[in-house]
Length: 331
Image (cartoon, rainbow, N blue to C red; front, side, top):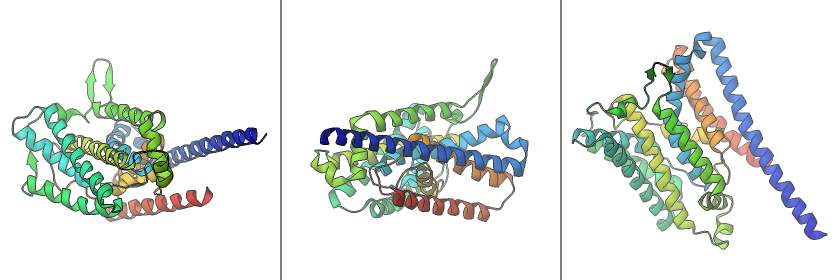
């Protein structure tokens, strides 16, 4: 009898968690629709033109790819403030390697490897020194940004034109307009990350660590190894976002992506993630990144000055943190 009640209780709890996750994801999707309709009413029907929707999609993928890695990190109860600096370093490494005669694929892989190395350093410092991720990544944010500026000699690095420059450009053939390759790549990565979180041991370990690190340790989860892996993967995805940023700029810029880490974190939290760990979803993260992109492009097309856009972005971040706290009290 007691066993049956326990089983029923666990099933009911699992259904409640699934229902709550669905509500969170639907809520952010509804929010995306509301924000888009609001700007559509202000700007006009041209806001929903195919070219403008594609522009928003291209802007979304730069935040989204880095946010996919941040989703895994936040699910594990961590945070990474160095992603914006890693994006900048990635653009510089890509441009420098292309300048030195490397092929475009080798340049992109080199940039991703440089980002993964930065993530591994973050993971080692967090696990071996026992310092909270916020402090470690705050320090490496400055270190990586300084490395990017030093490698670029504090200026933009020009690079030869390759197919990397076409990742976020629309291809056209006789059948009509096609989405840029970078958008398809982002969708594939999103499916891969979602599968990892939901159906692999590594994903289950991330949720376990984020929910209760002590309990996860008692259950045999290798905490340090898992944290090292997730920070490495998260930084590699941030570096891949930097390759997409390079595609957009066509130069290596050590000053680009300043403050991008705030957009990335806000996208994850708006999408249902928790700063305390143990919760997050890929669908929610993509919707959160889309909301950030729609607001930024909408403000720009509405002709609002940059300081107004910064106020709006800051308000969104405050709202995201408040939403996370409300979710915690509701559980």
